[in-house]
Image 1 (cartoon, rainbow, N blue to C red):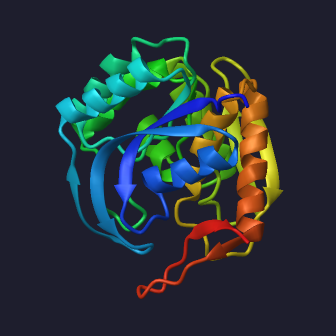
Image 2 (tube, rainbow, N blue to C red):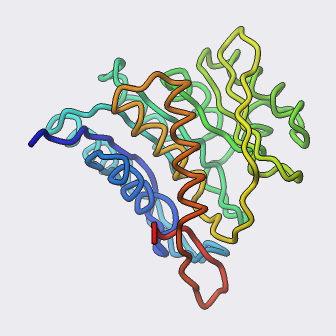
Length: 264
């Protein structure tokens, strides 16, 4: 029996299990990989809000990453919540050791309920130190607006923001369209200097949306770890998320939110 490929996720822990490290692990396993983890923050949250959170020390974040890189044949890496400028720099220093390993950076700047994880100095550190190392950056509309300094309220504006971010960091950018108000789900892939490439699918009517950004970025990393080219990894990851939302089951919380929990 062949060994599974290894994907390292560097992200926060979600006590509700619907996002962050927990859903990254499930996604990587579902695509056939072995999930390695480096926990960057511990959160107390349900699907509706973050009640409290605390960062993991930069020293411990680096130790987790170094142990994973030293002890396992890591085929791909994904980052999510990084709690501050120091943590961003610590992660970047560790990942510079493995420049040939595909890296998906999901720039988690804040929770959907408004909890801020990165200050302005942390965002500057992200743009300076980590985004230039990425194989792909995966902001949603609010994150793309913050990273680009441009308004993002339409698909055309999302594309312009993606073009600017790709030009500034020199890396491909996938601007996720989940925040769009219309019925279609359109994601915009931008390679530096090229025209945007659009992926479109019908929007699925479901309340199980908590953690979908984590699922998508982890799935892209997993498919890159399996050897797929970037464009194909994005296509396969979107298909994976579509199936998960269509076939998945929700778990009801006292807070009345729901999150994707797995296939029936």
